[in-house]
Each structure stands twice: as structure tokens, then as C-alpha cells.
Amino acid sequence: MSRVTQIRTLIALVGGLFSALAFAKPVELDDISRKEVAERIAPLGSVCLEGEDCAANAGATASTASGPRSGEQIFNQFCTACHTSGLLGAPKKGDKAVWETKLAAAGDFSKLLGNAIKGVGSMPPKGTCGDCSDEEISNAIEFMSGLKP
Ligand code: HEC
Image (cartoon, rainbow, N blue to C red):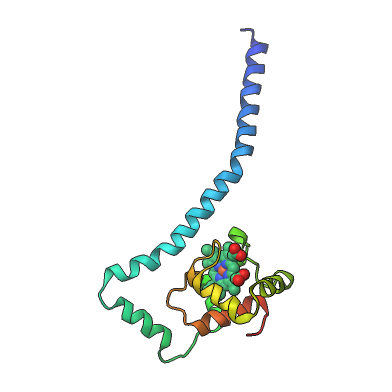
């Protein structure tokens, strides 16, 4: 091989590599999102393997002393993972038009709330806030959608 041919071959190889990467990228991102979601959901499952009282404690934190947590608190701790960026197609915080569509599709606010509690599409039940009361989920929906219960 002449030097020119070698260089051409090299350029072709590098070019091929870049286009392969370009095609592979969405798949990688998708895998990362899935991993992220799995990681965020995982601790919920492990909490109760560690101690016998944990289920009782989780219930207690949700319902004692300080009363229901605000929508902002719940959102920032749990919902933001998907509802800020629109991960997995989640309706974004403050995207009023999309939220109106979701509300219309569900029927009314209580149905929307019911879907969030049960889980809907790629959204896990209670948006990964396992110890959230229905009221706290409702607060979080109100906070991110601007819709009123
Ligand atoms: C793991 C990502 C994820 C997290 C965390 C998450 N959501 Fe979602 N959520 C989604 C996705 C995806 C959708 C769209 C589901 C669909 O329409 O298929 C959605 C849709 C919704 C809807 C609309 C339901 C409907 O009937 O259309 C509500 C309400 C909602 N989420 C509330 C919440 C609340 C409240 C939290 C936090 C406590 C939360 N979500 C956390 C992914 C998430």
C-alpha cells in the first residue's frame, strides 16, 4: 500500500467510526435513561429489606407531625427526575398546554391523580414516591401542572 492509500484507508475507517457513533448515540442515551430510572427506583425496593420496622416507619413519616409535604418538596425530590426534562415522554413542569391535554384525556383531575398513583405508561406508581400520601401526590401535580384539584 502506498502512503496515500494508507491515509485514505485511515480516513475511511475514522469516518466510518464517527458515523457508527452517530447512529449508535440515541440507543446509548436510551440505555442511560433506562439505567437512571432503574437506579432511582431501586432504593425503594431495598429499603424494606434492611430492617423489620421500615414499612411502619415509612408510613409514619408520611402521616406524622408536620402534615402533608408541599407539592414543591415532593416535586423536587421525586418528580423532577422525569418531569423537568421530559424524560421518557413525561409532560414537563409548567407546560400548560400539554397538561391541559392530559387533563382532557384523563377526564378530570381526580382521574389524572388516580393515574399518577397507579402509574401510567412509563411512569412508575406514585412517580417513585412510595411513601407519598394521595394528598402529597395531588400537591405535586398541582405544583408542576398549574391545574387545580
Ligand atoms: C420515572 C419517570 C417519572 C417520574 C419519577 C415521575 N413521572 Fe409522572 N409521568 C412520567 C411519564 C413518562 C408520564 C407520561 C405517561 C404517559 O402518558 O404514557 C407521566 C405522566 C404523569 C401524569 C399524567 C398522567 C395522565 O393521566 O396523563 C401525572 C399527573 C404525573 N406524571 C405525576 C407525577 C408525579 C406527581 C410525580 C412525582 C411524585 C411523577 N409523576 C414522577 C414519568 C415519571
